[in-house]
Length: 423
Image (cartoon, rainbow, N blue to C red; front, side):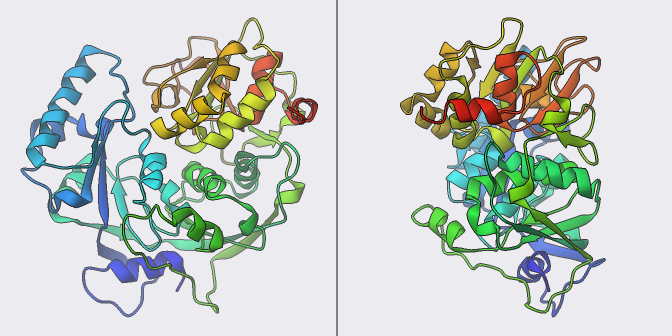
């Protein structure tokens, strides 16, 4: 069996000898994460479960509408605060105390090898970077998971993606994913298991960028193996003992695809969708932009803010461009502040927001207007995703977004990073 199948087997409500594609598995979950956007669903807000199956395994995190952008949301999250008290859950994180759920859960040591975590967010696939499983569930399903601690999945086929080589120059993990997206296209009801000699060169945050973005391929799960890099990351962070999961040595896959990361250069996803719709940044260079956005669960990490600061240091954002930068968690915000990244971004003319999903999900903090053209390192570029349906959204790495913000048009960041390499 592969990693996905083994984790399902380990969590099966009833003992099973083997899990295979096409099976429906009923599993016990290790943790449940409820977000403000899920809690605001009328069905939950007006008729919430009386109590959770285990209050220590349920967390409530406000991340999408932080702070509340209107009275309706403010009234709803006020009810959720009261619900958290009624459930007596310790893991409740209001404004300024947490951040975007996937990144914050990893920081908090909840994402551990071998686990299954239930969450409604469509980018819950991010957890695969930690040798575990999570995928987005609907609010009604989350309600029953809160009550029972159980859910179910249909097991899909698994594709093996081997990453070899090491990233070079201005290439970032987002570019690795965009190259994958361009070649693999849409793969619904399918899992990805990463392997290859290049994985050891990727930090856990870089792996998380890639796994998070695999939601845009319609993948169910995108899981990385356990290795020394992940072990080091979890040392002193994990909330409980864990058991790593590895595929059988003789395991076969639906297909195998290889990507040499040393050959990948900065990439851009063209507007309206990601899968099968990417090009090298150099091929799109010169396309005008109005707004540049850096952030989200995928690319609001410390590495992203560092990359943006390296490019922006000593430069200014183009006169007609708005640059919005959103750290993924409060911890990242504070680290970036101590390291001077936020000051560099602000001095260049960028706006730094509090941690929130905000502009990425079209909720607030920088929506696009009619006719706007944006480049973003957030998670989606669907029509209407970040505001007006008449806006156009390109997607790229944080380095490419920062370089584009300076020039006022889509720019391969290589030359700018090279010029500031001594800073």
